[in-house]
Image 1 (cartoon, rainbow, N blue to C red):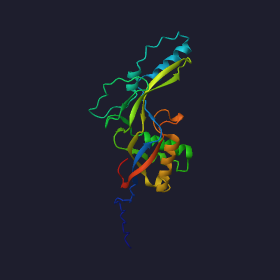
Image 2 (cartoon, rainbow, N blue to C red):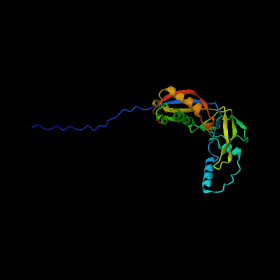
Image 3 (spheres, one colour):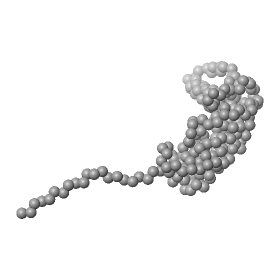
Image 4 (tube, one colour):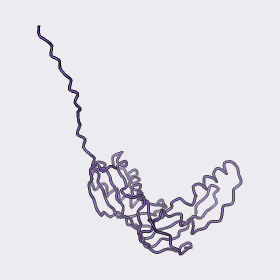
Amino acid sequence: MAKATAVLEDKSPTFMAIELPVFTHVRVKLVGTAPLLTHAGGDGLAELLLNQQKEKALGKKKKDRAPQNPFEEFKKGFYPLMSGKEFPTVELKVGESWPYLANTFTMLNRAFQCSLVEAMLVYGGFKTDARRWIRPVGPQYIPIKYDKVVLRQDVVRMADKTPSPRFRPEFHNWSLEVEIAYRKNSMPDPKSFWSLAIDAGNCVGIGDGRSIGLGRFDPVGIETKEIRNEGI
């Protein structure tokens, strides 16, 4: 009688080849075509508006607001200064300005990314997940170049409809050098990125006051390179 032959199951691990993603890094110079307004949020405007809304809802009497110091509010509108730098000692009045100071004032690095994503959502033409694959590269804050920075005054309406002046820094003839990484297959072709960047500069901008045309820019390419699986 024939004996049965045992068949041993192959339990050796199976490996799958996974293609690593390729990211395109683009270094871009943003050349301002309209003044850039920054507002780091240090003046407590949002908290003040919220408190006024609560007081109005509870029927409380409006409290008198403490006197404003235009120059101090102006300084709170800047993002953190570059390491080791300090504000100029010359105190400004509304409409006055400081001249250019090298490697002193900064802008959010992710501002360009936010502008690209907004342009993508408004103008479309890209894959729905493309915005997830656009990332800023480098430090959180990057130095800004400019001709002068002005103490600008605007007027906003509080919750009770009373006008309230705001004092913020406004950069003239500004420029930034930023680096963006995006997954190569998230864009139809390389020209699509530049088309998106142009839309972002012409129609979206960066910083505060974008709804009135501030922060607009022209994108100028500096360098493009591809990196495989660089971990963003």
